[in-house]
Amino acid sequence: MKISKVEAFAIRYPLREPIRDATHDLTLYELAVVRLTTDDGLVGHGFSPATHGGAEVIAGLTRTMLAPVLLGRDPFHVRGLWDELFWRTQIVGRAGANRLAMGAVDIALWDVMSRSLDVPLWKLLGGTGVERFPLYSTDAGWLSFPQAEMIGKMRRVLAQGFHGVKMKIGSPDPRADLRRVAAVREAIGPEKALMVDINTHWDLSTALRYGPQLDAFDIDWLEEPMNQHDVKGHAQLQAVMRAPLLVGENLTSLTLFRDYFEQRALRLAQPDVTRLGGITRWLDVASLARANSIRVVPACWDSMQVSIHLAAATPEVHLMEHLDWTLDVFEERLQIENGYLRVPTGPGVGCTVRQEYAEQYRIPEA
Image (tube, rainbow, N blue to C red; front, side, top):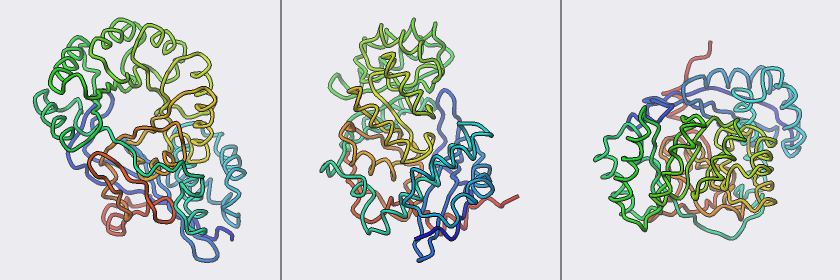
């Protein structure tokens, strides 16, 4: 089996409602879409996000730099191809658009492999036997929601069976953030899981001053408090906080995760399958987490379709994030029941972009 065709294009579509956190203010969302066709007619599907635009850049890079490496190659040589793609694109950087392009391609390669064997991805990777995963909701906790509206949304998702809620902070006044967290904890009660996400907005001084104060609200984790490259700063903060730090959504290399583990700068790892360059590198991070006795909470803001397979093949995953940014985009519908996400049983990864989305929201190529 050889790859005979590589397609890459971008789509831009509206979110169900505008959202804002400490770094994002969004009404539209973009995905770069990759399709790999083999000489026996199989089609593998992959994608990567572009939060603030640029999906067409990712798609163009795929067509010009990655496609020549892929054509005529065996998709089962995925690890060798990953390394070739890495060295082909490292001249334009080892993060950002090139890594997202690799992520889309790598997902499509794994989709081809699992479809060729007529099994879901998790079975190809080796499953854990877990058939469903508890979900926590992020959709209810955006910084753009007035406090009363946010609390109302949180109560509704908890009543639907979700196993916790995550809220965004990072306003100009950290004391106002603390008051907002206190109001949520009081509203949902002491038994419900509450996660807090700053989206890398604080500097070290702010984090050391206000981070430990969040422990008073018994939060389950503090997510991405600072610049993701400041491993030492995260280690300082983790040393003075009872709550675990959850870090990794913006880490793009295995060596950065290694440094975080070695310096005890986090207690929960959050690898992002697209930003890391795909399933191949995500699995490496999960193995490294296992070696360091660290639990994994996959970054699912754009990749629930893929991450559920990874969770089903990774014993360190016990909880998953729910966001609905991409749930309407794909043909394969995820099954969510009473706050649980069921492990898919169909072949492949399950990220086939619906034809109406591809036609209606496709961004014209330059």
